[in-house]
Length: 96
Image (cartoon, rainbow, N blue to C red; front, side, top):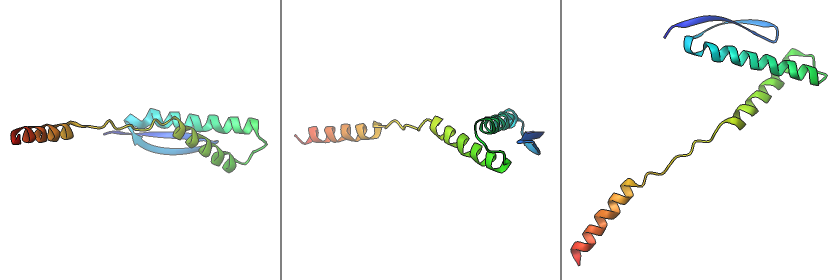
């Protein structure tokens, strides 16, 4: 898998990254989301410290991601139980 070099800007600082080509768009989108969250917090609250804004944005974005995540529902597979019950039924009918 080939890697691409990206220069990501978060909160006014540049971060050079090498990421798999398939993840480049997701990394760019994540950086954009972080910057958007920082801008919204800066506009709505009297916070100017970049570290505080980053921490608040991380908390906000992770909370949102967890809330949006869908729980995995496992469908039960009763085939083995049904087969065992059918075998037991056959055994019982042979005894009678």
